[in-house]
Image (tube, rainbow, N blue to C red; front, side, top):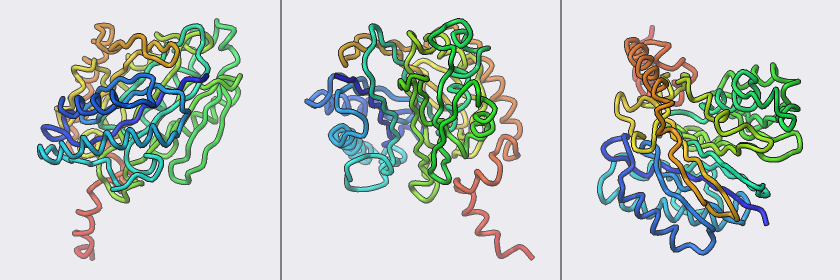
Length: 358
């Protein structure tokens, strides 16, 4: 029987502001998942103000029962958030009734189904104050860059490379690109993370290696209601990159779009779960990582990966970069380019100025 890992997240309310997710919401989510008979196991946490449900089961991806369970959790937590007057209560809940799948309804999802190996390490990445395309840089580095992943050169199981499925977020179409032979074609697309998003990665033997959440919240809502705050699931070892190779790209706090009001570029800071609070200018953007060991569809170990002094320099550099870009204030390149500001609250200001142009 195959194992499925479903990571489903939503911003149901922050306190104070957009900084973090209150423990009451986490406790409510745990209580609801504990009662479920469809799950094999679960882990509840948060990244910034996003509630994260990590679930294992044998139902496959896009399963109605799993998605309904997640929806019920978010609805119960939204009720608490509204009662407590948390900021943006129910922000990611764009519809009132469940329609069989949470996709297109606000929450973000990343799910994969696979046959368990002799040992299955799985890394779950969670980000806050950034967009779905934020994973493009690290996923490319993990599965296509030999300077990052030594196994691409010296491991015969990985030497043939991987296949990337890339989503055109504006047209809703996908393309599969094989590396290393089509590496430049891949870079031509994923270097524009606002338009093209790496959706999944497979081995040449068609084994699933990684999946990301590709939901664009502004496109679903028709207006700016918050950034996408994406999640990603990556399998490691035994034909896939080693755990250390998967983590290596995050030693560099690369720039991502999001941060304050979803309107600014800033460094993605890797932090432990306890530091996943976005405070300075509602940031800087954060990424956390939960390292799981999966056996018989259960979570037998869960480790807070970025709570490691090995990433202290990345955090220090992220703060330095944050200081530098903040000095630009409302000017580009700190503020996003015009085409991306169309999905923020700026159009409301421009509408007011429209009639003043002569």
